Amino acid sequence: MLQSTSPQVDAVPRPEAGANHESPLLAPLGVTAFRNIWIANLVGNLGTWAQSVAVAWVITAAHAGPIMVAMVQVASAAPLVLLSIAAGVLADNYDRRKIMLAGQVVEMGGAVCLTVLAFVGYLDPVALNLAVLWISLGSTITAPAWQAAVGEQVPASMVGTAVLLNGVNFNAARALGPALGGLMLSVLAPSWVFLLNTLSYLGLLAALWQWRRQAPVHALPPEGIREGVVAAMRFTWNSTVTRLAMLRSFMFGLAASVIWALLPLVARAYPGGDAALYGYMLGMIGAGAILGSVLVPALRRVLGSSRLISAAAGTLATMLVLLAFARSLTILMPALAVAGACWITALTEYNTNVQILVPDWVKGRALALYQTALYGGLAIGSFLWGHLAETMSVSGAIFAAAAVMAVSTLLLYHSQFPQVDAASMRLTMRSKTAPPILAFDHQQGDVVMAIEYLIPAERTAPFMALANPLRHLRLRNGGKYWGLFRDVRNEELWREVLLIESWLQHLRMLDRMTLADKALIDQVRTLHAGKEPPRITVSVSYESIIEDKDDQTGAG
Image (cartoon, rainbow, N blue to C red; front, side, top):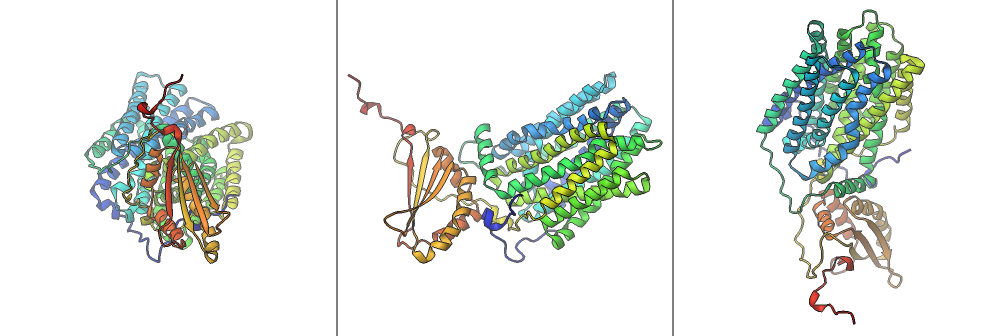
């Protein structure tokens, strides 16, 4: 089982009482940029959910088997699983507004393709899945930048509430969009539903175009894809918070995916089951999610974030049992509403924790990794439950998913997210450092930093207690190796040694320092007993040194 997260594990300080003031639910809508994008996104989500009903029902009406039906979810999730981290690197290094615009254009292109296919009558399951894959590719480009940009649209104190409002937006559309799609399908051909979705992108493109984002000034060149992915992997490996969010969201998505994968088959199994009934079922999930969104702040105050996630997952497991065996819509519909509330509660808490507990320099990638874990669970689960539905019935597959949800909830119950002040994740201003005198290649060759501390015997125990948090801090910010050594001839002399892959990466590490990081380093330095500050030396590998041709001697 994963070790419980604590401030000691991740070296994140707990806030003082009242440090995290939670803004009113509608406060972010008072910010013009957020409000315009939120309203346009609501229209876009309505079109997306109306289209989802048309896609799912067309492929079901074509008498496709459970695997082909479930493959719609796989096509939706696969790009998010495979490409999110690369999109996260772009979101952390380039203008997030421009990335969001580019992603929406790609997504709209897929919607146009689907619409054309529908109007010309070439609407078989394979073509549908390919079009869904194209649309999902655009969504993958957009998602990390979209998630990370929430903190740029509203003040820091409103980030958690803004994330919740985005969840309300998504689920309000989930409540109304399927009903709209089902109503349109009852009187019009699916091609008109696809056209509606295509047109719904226009408002969002306009809102993003009008948003005048204040892009941060970067003193260093942007990271390449490989460098950015490696930095994200190092951060994640040394950040228990990020690993916990990924693990819990993966297990949640794995089990919860059974709803989206098999709900069309559940609807079709009822007498008179048609596209309208499937739309009403999705509408109940959305309505429950809206109600859950209203209750989340109060429940979070009572239970705390981690316990609330566990409560939502445990309740959803019970609702899945009802979904598997209920034979009456009077039982099934309320169960779907409660499932929707559980879904939005868990996802809001995952997203908010990553938004608050991760510094801005890696936020896009951390959110991408969280999304990768979640949609990886959705994709694998959809494929798994589709196969099980063919071999052990739809009810059996849903019950198996309920068992997976219940077991994972029990195993992860004691894994906790820390409560922190969001301000501690702000980046500090890099202090001026003396430029190097030596001429060397800043992008090649390792850099070694050594820091010498004088620690009296009576301070050794508290110094050692801070060693592991300090190690995680250095490594997650970009170090390749970290070690702490004690001099064999002077027991009060300690050396912290850090290996970094290049001088450019060394400068990036200085830029990545947060207030929480600085607080930990200051805490370590208060234990230093020397009259002068700890002595710091920085050395570069001989491989990076630029040789002076005039000093070279020829052979012979």
